Each structure stands twice: as structure tokens, then as C-alpha cells.
Amino acid sequence: MSSTDQCILLVFSNPGNRTNLDRSFSVHFTLVQSECRVALLTHWISLDPLANLGVQVPASLAGFYCEQISIQPQIILLKEGTENSQGKPQLISNINACQAVVDAVRTTLGPRGMDKLLVNNGKATISNDGATIMRLLDIVHPAAKTLVDIAKSQDAEVGDGTTSVVLFAGEFLKQVKPFIEEGVHPRIIIKAFRKATQLSIEMINSLAVKIEKSNTVEHRALLEKCAATALSSKLVSHQKGFFSKMVVDAVLLLDDLLPLNMIGIKKVNGGALEDSILVDGVSFKKTFSYAGFEMQPKKYNNPKIALLNIELELKAERDNAEVRVKSVSEYQKIVDAEWNILYEKLDLIHKSGVQVVLSKLPIGDVATQYFADRDMFCAGRVPEEDLKRTMKACGGSVMSTAHDLTDSVLGRCEYFEEKQIGGERFNIFTGCPNAKTCTFILRGGAEQFLEETERSLHDAIMIVRRTIKNDSVVAGGGAIEMELSRALRDYSRSIAGKEQLLIGAIAKALEVIPRQLCDNAGFDATNILNKLRQKHAQGFSWYGVDINKEDISDNFEACVWEPAVVKINALTAASEATCLILSVDETIKNPKSGDGQPPMGRGMGRPM
Ligand code: ADP
Ligand code: MG
Image (cartoon, rainbow, N blue to C red; front, side, top):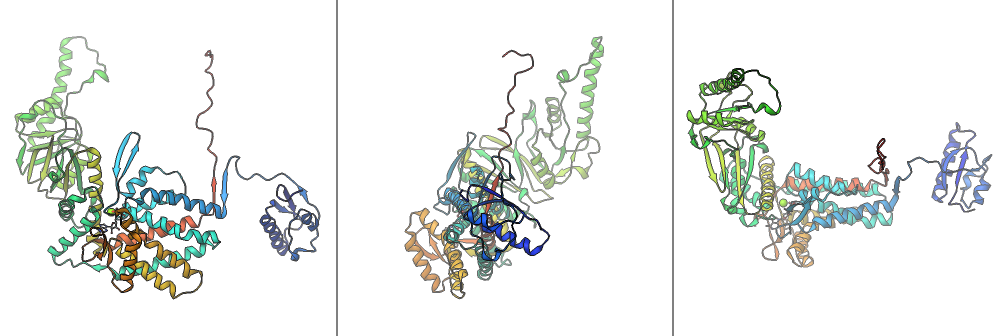
């Protein structure tokens, strides 16, 4: 009988005795170690049968009174088909899965990074943004999903550094993989990570350069540099000067809280990227309009604006109502009544003295002509988001009745205009008194290109907001990572034991950013990293990769600046994800409940 293919039921006769219980557990563990599948311990056992099975029993257990040993079938704890893997192989396989994900985004890092073309349900997306790529990859591996989450959280929290965070996590895992294979306990590794992250954050905080806010010109220049660094790795990097100015203008137009939703981004196909404009107010695409619209004026100074949620249209009720009439005159009455209701509403709106009428619901041809006759402008079916933004910017409130249109519920702005931009017409409200808001109107060729431009601007906007809020910056291009790596390596030399090697490995992992920047640009990474290590050892903290000259340079002077918070957040998130993945030693996957479809039976009485 081999000891591996059977199940032993061990039965306690005296489970209340604490010491015996403990001992019996050690029997249990010994058995598990010898790969004999033990199901349950409930009875005293004889040691001899165990010895016969080839199980090593510790000497301390000798002398046990044994009563019975019986061979029983395995106790089934989990549903049949449940996948269960555990231990070191499990950990290694998780790490490998993460590595595969990291390899997918690796090449997009930095100014010379490549873009990815992702096709999802026939819709093509071209992107360089780590979070977007990770989201579209649709990863199913449970551990690798963690990386998607950190990319998303980085995107939500700081908006940039999404590729970096994934790379950090991947490289951390790669560097500790040999330790796991050697059998170092994950907890020790996790402890080293906690320590290294804490040290790195202290280091970043002490190195970061505070920005002087009092000098507005200088402050502005600095914000532009941060925006330019964020944009330099994107598809629009050639226009980064143009866009970084625009982004800073946009963010500075907002109020102190810098609400992101007060920046609208509209895209119009056609034209060149440089034809994009920034409107300091609300703007949205002209909505569908009826005959008579051409007669309405398209420009107003200081108009009053009504924001409505009313349908100003004669209803075509034939689809959803039935009215039975006996004579033509009765029918005429019904029609008249409907016209009267509409005219009453229109009169009320006109009397309130507004010039611009916006409604979430349709404004039909009768109403359009009515307004045209009275020199008023109207737009129906305005998207809710745009109507809300207009409300926040111009004041007033969205009304669902035409009564009580007093000045307090009407919006105001300094100038309203409907303007032709490319092939589209836009309604533009400027000089809004209430909230500060602005709208980008992006121009450009292909749809995908415009979408990627929007995502890139989002990164830059987030970075400028962050810089205004947290006002301290570090040098990018791998400079800060090299400095952290040096600091950690120095620290590791001052401590003893396994931790020394682990912190050393983490220090090495941080070099992934400059290495990848070089690799993506086609530089000799080993050579440049050697130069960088040397410079940093000599105390030049801001030396990083110079993308233009295939060399190293002082990136603080070269104005490759990033907000410190980007790096702090990236490091924290990556190290947390690493610890999370390392602390998992077992995955239990439930079998899918059924195969999704109930068996197709024959319908009652229906022949086959
Ligand atoms: P992420 O999604 O992490 O922001 P990016 O593709 O935007 O990834 O690349 C950001 C990296 O590129 C940062 O490490 C940044 O320091 C670096 N970088 C940006 N501009 C430059 C530049 N002009 N020279 C060198 N490195 C740069
Ligand atoms: Mg970036």
C-alpha cells in the first residue's frame, strides 16, 4: 500500500485533552508533509500502522494509545470541478501572469514609447495611456487584474504615471521571484517592501522642489513645463507647446477647487490640431433644429437664458393615444386645445424676457418659428451634461414649467454666439458670471486620433491640477528613480540579513524606468544606466535620460518636471499591489455554475 493514495481517518477518543490535541495536530502535519492525504483527526491512532504506511512519526508521539485506523474515502469539501492550486508554484504562476501583462504595456513608456492599437468589438482605439490599454485588455487572470486596478487608481488619483505604476509592480515582482523560488517567506519580502516604500517616500519628499506661487509668471511657466512633460510621451508630443499653454489656461480659468467636470472637451473632425481652440465658457454642438431656425438671431450681448425641461412641440399622439370623436368640430376643438397649450407656454417664455431658450426636450417647428418671429434663439434636445454645465456657469436653474420664469431662475452670460467651427456649428456662451468653466474644441483628422488627443489632454489637465494643489516637483526621465535606487542601495549596505538582499533587489527594480526609457528610444540601456549610476553616486541627484541626445543630462535644468505626487502615488500603489500578490498562496476557483444555458427541451406538444 503506498502512503500517497489513501485517506486515513484518525479518530480521537479524548479530544478534550489539550496537550493530546496539540500533539495530534502535529501528527496531522507530519502526515500532510509526507503527502499522505489526511482527512480528519478524531481518534487516537496506533503508530505502527502509520509506520507501515511509510509515514515518519516523530519520537515525541511514541507511546500513544491507539485504537483504530481505518481507511475511508476522502472528505469532499469543495464542489467537484473546483480548481485549487497553492503554495510556491501558485505564487510563481501569479508572478508570471503579471509579467505577461507588464510586457504588454512596457513599450509605451516615455517620449519615444510606441502606441497600441486595440480592437474591441470592432471599435479601434489607438492609445499610449497605460490605464486605457489595461482597461481594454480585458484581463481575466485574477492576480494580474490587480495591475489593472492600480493603473486605474493611478489614473483616478493623479491622472498620469499609469504606465509607470504597472512597470514598477511588474519589476518588483520580477526582482523578488528568485527569492520566492529559493524559499524566502513572502512575509519577509513584504516587510522589506514596506520599509523600502517608506524610505522612498521620505526621500522624494525631501528631494522635491517647492514651487514659488507668489510670482504668477514663474508659476505659470512651471505649470506649462509639467504639462509639457506629461504630453511629451503622447501622440500630440509635437504640439506640446501649443497644448500645454492651452491646458494651463484652461485650469487657471477654473475656481479654487479646480473641478474637472467644468472643463468640457468637444471634438470636431477635420482641420489641423493647431486649429483647436479653448473657449472660456460653455460651448456645445448645435442641436437638431427645425425650419425657421435660420431666421433666429445668432448673437446676443448679455442675454437672459432659460434652461428648460419642457417639450415645446405639438404631440403626434396617433401612436400612443386614441380619441374617438363624432364630428369634425369636436376634432377641431381637440386640435385647438393642443395649440392653445403650446402657445400659452410660448407666451409665458416670451414674457419672461429671455433671449436664449435651451431645453433638454425637443423644441418643434411651431415653437422655433414663434421664437424666430420674436428675435429669440432656441435649442432643443440639449444633452443633459451640457445643460447642467450651462446652468452651473450661467446661473439659474432647469425648470420643468413655463410659469414662474423670474430673473432668479434665468441664467446670464456676457455674450452668446452660434459659430461655425469646421463642419459643425457650436453654441458658445462666454463671460459666464457664476462658475468658471471652459471648453476645448479639438480639431484633427481621424476619430481615433482625436480620442487619443482627448485622453492626452486629460493627463495634462490632471497634472496641472495636481501641481497647483501639491506644488512640489521632481525631475523625470528616470532621474528620481535613479536617485531612489541609489539611496536604497546605500541603505541596504547598512543593514544585515535577508533584508539587505531584498532592499538591494528593490533598488535594482527602480531602475526599470530609465532602462525602459532607453530601450524604447533604441539607446544602449546598459551604457546609459552605468553613466547614470556614476553621476548619482557623485551626488548629482537630477541626472536622467536625455531623450534627444542619447545621453544623460540634468533633467531638472532640462525642465523635464513631474509632480512629486505622481511618483509617490505610483510607488505606493505598485508596492501595495506587489505585497498583495505575494501574500496570496492559494487560489480556489469555483467551477462555473452550469454552462450558462439551460438544456433546450422540446416545447410542449411541439413536434421535433
Ligand atoms: P505614464 O503613463 O507612466 O505617464 P508615459 O508614457 O507618459 O507613461 O511616460 C512617462 C515617463 O516618461 C516618465 O518617467 C517621464 O519622466 C518620462 N519623460 C517624459 N518626458 C520626458 C523627456 N522629455 N525626457 C525624458 N524623459 C521623459
Ligand atoms: Mg504620462
